[in-house]
Image (cartoon, rainbow, N blue to C red; front, side):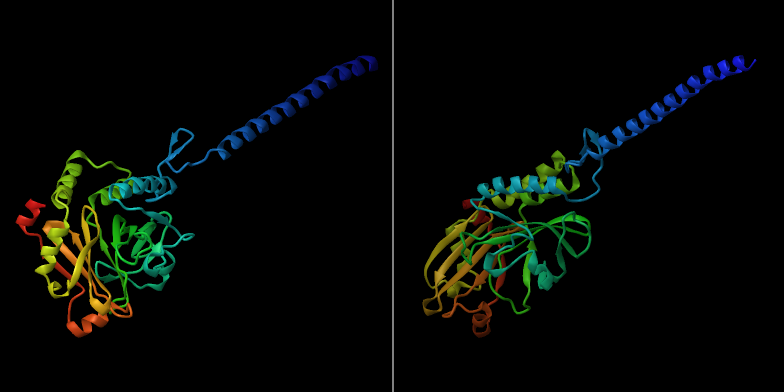
Amino acid sequence: MKKIISTALLAIIPLTLVGCTNNGNSKSNASSSTGSTTKVISHQADDGSGSVHGKSVKDSSLWNNNKDNQLANFMVSWGKSMNQSYTQCTPNRNTTYTGLHYPNDFTDNKMAFNDRHLSAGWSTDGSDAHDVNVVAIYEDTNGGSTVGGRIYLFAIQNNSPVVYYTEQNQGTPDRLVHFETTQNTDLTNEFKKLVTNKKLNPETTNSNRSTKSESTSAPLTFDEGMQILQQSNYKNYLNESPKLVSSDKQQLVISSLAGAKGINYFTLTLEKNKQIKIHAEMGSIEGGPRNQFNATDHVPEYQTVTRSTTSNSNS
């Protein structure tokens, strides 16, 4: 009887051991499978285009690296079409035009946008932390000159894309740097498309092209610019040897010697509804601020005039 029991026990023990071994292998396989899945997920990366390894993922941010790169490529081609050269500026490479250093100078809070004193700040994703949230900056220093250059700010304001620019190169009575909304539809359309992730529909594009055609199909010429200045508040300050400094589709810069005072510069910018904005920058013997000149002669820094139909058709 004892032999029978012993034999039975010996038969059961291997089965028990086999059962434990199988459970262990099962757990090991499950753990291996889980680890493998985790590893695959951890290597999935967002390339900024809104997709993760072929799977569509909605990017809720208004701005990202992919959009920034697309804008950079656009600015190269657009700059060439305007006979201008633009440099991208970031916190690691600030603007240099006329001593302005953006984005670092944003913290000074000395900026006006369309004549409103607003706060501005650098934003990598367009999040609403300031009145004007700047996601990209480009400048054209016009070869290092203090005249004829410009700075563009691509920003999100009230959750909407907007492009501002300035050509200011001297101080103002309010001690602010004044930025205005650009009238260039190529810039505004491209930026809007990138921010909203939408292509403009044909009707909108054609409408904008029509607006652009109205303002840029007949660019300002030197002769027309001189006619405008001779009928403006600055007609007595053209003085000697007026000449063309620079021109593009929407803007003209004319200079004139001012004797011992140096050189006067007049920037004429073509805006909506055939309006032309004149920005006068008067020279001084020491190269001092323009408002010293105005204090004596009461000449405004800016004047807006309407482009005549005759000039538009002839140019």
